[in-house]
Length: 333
Picture 1: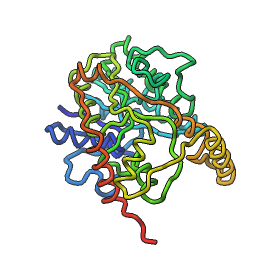
Picture 2: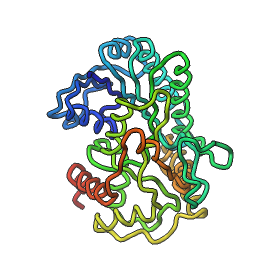
Picture 3: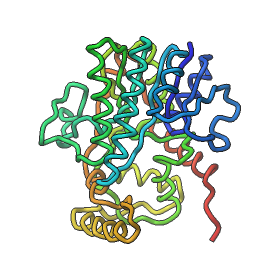
């Protein structure tokens, strides 16, 4: 089988490419620019130059493949860059989905748990699955990433009635190797390079990016057309996650919760920095609010239908730290 992968230089996309090559599939990767050194070294892949809205390039690439895995996305956890995010995530997905529909190709959309409802509280019964209804009480904060990724899902969903053969997967908080840019590895770097006393009060569903990549391949192979699959993992508080990472990095564990007052102060500092630089800081009220929420999810459907599984979290954290230290050495002071 020949598979077209978008976002192949990204964290999940690169792991998907490696899994496809490993199992013997032919792989074409859509890239805008020449990939950085190392990203595809020793991998037999075809590089196709083009952007997500280059209709002629996308159409020709999809026509030559048997399936499409759409992993590319613009990730901005903030209030600004809404139109840019919509162009990349909504319009890019529309271009891919339209070509997949036109050529009758199987498609997997990599969405995110950020498009799903939030966990309401700590009770086991409130952990979110594919059937959890969305209402005002458990909705996600409408930042650029959430809004544009929901629009991306909508572009696929509305084409299902026209015959598009697609599945939609929702990864949790991924850690692990081959995080070139880095993505979640930035959190590991931040904890490694300085002591951070405050820790977010929320939680996430930690999963190994390699397990998620296996889940995506299972979805493209045998997932039920039109279904959503949550590819999450270990539901933990950030305090536990940061403590485990700090231990592996030889740092002190965070000791203070990043409560409402600290979030307000942090958001104010970020707003000042944004006005000064002209660009929204990563330290903004949307990102800080996200970090205070419980992003906990249930992957039972993916386990039952796709054989999805999670390795022990400790192994994932070990490999994430090893990857970051090997590829992003600490600068000498």
